[in-house]
Length: 239
Image (cartoon, rainbow, N blue to C red):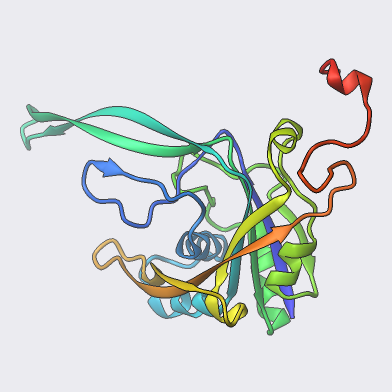
């Protein structure tokens, strides 16, 4: 078993699974299909290579919310032109983002060579990966580590990656969403998040089961309620 741990952070992210027309929503955390798209791009897969893309659904997947972001609405005006170059109409589009969010994504598989190939692709991507939109690149520290543990155990053991200011105001019990078959017995919800095709002519997704779990992070500087328990005079002054 081998698992890759990735850190998604940055000023803005956007993870839509149900957007249509002029309103582009974002989910509250990254989707598996978005991560599969990122992996496929890194490996140099083309949009029409459905079989290769669908094989990536076999990866075990989990995402931990280390720092919940704030929703941000971006106001856009777009124009549609006629064939002769004249303006046909102007219309408004609403685009939504997550601001200042941090997620830990874990992808794993029993075939270690398969995962090592993905690791190499993510470190030296063929096409540029991005966090939901082309204007949102990955941060320099997005690749954290590889692990011999499974997805759930890897998420449970990785230290909390949130910013210091966020830890002061939040509990250390984090929420994670994982493939439902990784945690048998937990309530499952269905999400339209199984990649079938990224073709621009036939973009389609199926459903996958997803379970919510809680992970309590043991941070030496936090008590059970998530507050700092060490006296630090300089920290109190913002130093």
